[in-house]
Amino acid sequence: MNTHAPAQHTDVLIVGAGPTGLALAIDLARRGVDALVVERAGALFPGSRGKGLQPRTLEVLDDLGVHDAIRAAGASYPVGVIWQDGVRTGEHRMFDAAEPTEGAPYAEPWMVPQWRTQEILAARLAELGGEITFGRELAGIEQDPEGVTAAFVSGPPVRARYAVAADGGRSTVRRALGIGMTGETVDPSPMLVADVRIEGLDRDHMHVFPPAEGGGYLAIWPLASTDEFQVVAGFPEGTEPDLSLDGIRKVVGARSHLAPGDVTEVRWASDFRPRAAMADRFRDGRVFLAGDSAHVHSPAGGQGLNTSVQDAYNLGWKLAAVLSGEARASLLDSYEEERMPVAAAMLGLSTRIHRGEARRGEATRQLGIGYRTSTLAVETRHGLAEEALRAGDRAPDGVRGGLRLFDELRGTHWTLLTVGAGAGAGAEVPGPPDPSALPGLADVRTVRIPSYEAYGDGVFLIRPDGYVGWAGTTAEGLASYAATISG
Ligand SMILES: Cc1cc2nc3c(=O)[nH]c(=O)nc-3n(C[C@H](O)[C@H](O)[C@H](O)COP(=O)(O)OP(=O)(O)OC[C@H]3O[C@@H](n4cnc5c(N)ncnc54)[C@H](O)[C@@H]3O)c2cc1C
Image (tube, rainbow, N blue to C red; front, side, top):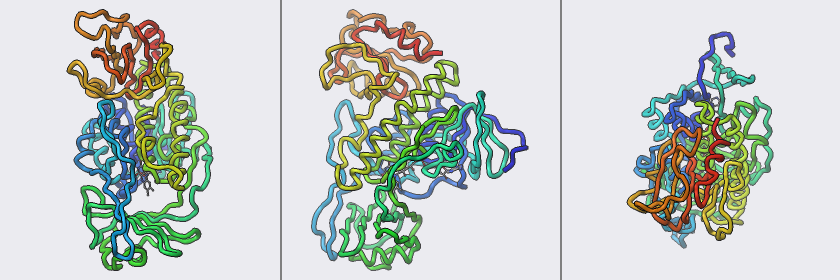
């Protein structure tokens, strides 16, 4: 450990260039924050594992400027065919069907191999002038009232005002801070996941091979925009899956009608035992835990990468606002307050899906996630209908008065949205929905649209991450909300 060389300085040290670190780095770069991403490996992660992007994540990626690239790189989830002795015996649909709506234009999960998502995120980061330093393994971290000092296996230390642990389930940062993970083993049986080339299977379907007596589960997915398949196989408790080409050939040969030699190449392979565990804290002073460093769970339900990217998206604007002096440091307390309940609910959902007790449907799409109980959510209206949009909820899309809301929300600003009475030309404006009414918030865009049932008439202050922060019939009280956030 080299602790004597002069330290490198940055505002935010991001440890790990997985989906969490990359998404956070993009969000900070587009806000002009000086951040440094350090990655232990020599290159980006090469495997397909987190391949299911949920609708809410697609919205986030739209805001981060990569939605078109993600669309071009992926495909819808294919229908599964169930095989028995070389004969197709049925179909399996992974997800409950969902149609796009005006408020939620992305209805279904989109399949992109994780390595490709990471490449797209890294390219966007480079476009914004951000960089990843590969081959930099964090070995320890200390903090004092002014900042953090990170030490590395080699190379100079880094001094930063804040650090974010985006270093995955075995997080070095979390361990260095002594933050425990509390949870349970979901399934003691190991699972193998591998990216392979296989002959003899069509690419229009996912292929399911139900376990024979005493055997294990096998599913083979065509990986969108590649000529590869992802093999997922379960093994009996106490065994170690063989990750070699030979080992995977044996599994495929034994559990399907394919010959072992039909597997022609293994490009990446890994194994894991599903656990559901959550860090006891998501924050320790100037250090935040995000993504898998804060929560690990079964991959059933495809929630991990999605929740991780959304952790980053929750944290990015808050760090930027505090670093620029726009917001009080206490804004950062809302990260753990908002994301811990989301992670806890997601852990439970993933475990239930793994055990076959819940389906992949509305909850796994993550559009219903919100922060109604957060201290940042202030609802001033009374007597709202059960289904009404409230402070804390995700701000829906929609086109009214020639404006598309997601176009108006896209970017780093807050949005002051007036809906209905007062929004039309020459009509009465309810209160003063004017950025000057919002002391301290540096970047507020004012938008007015005619009545729209997804919102109801009123005034809505939408946070930079697309959730309603404050809602009222008029703008009365909005200024004092802004004052509680601004520095
Ligand atoms: C089989 C499988 C299928 C999955 N399917 C899905 C799915 O369909 N949808 C979904 O949402 N999720 C899925 N996931 C989960 C998803 O892969 C993870 O949740 C996601 O990768 C978490 O991202 P992360 O950036 O937090 O962590 P990681 O992706 O683990 O990235 C952490 C990074 O930190 C680096 N690092 C670690 N230690 C250090 C250190 N000391 N110094 C510097 N760098 C360090 C690592 O090299 C790595 O690059 C799946 C997972 C598995 C195993």
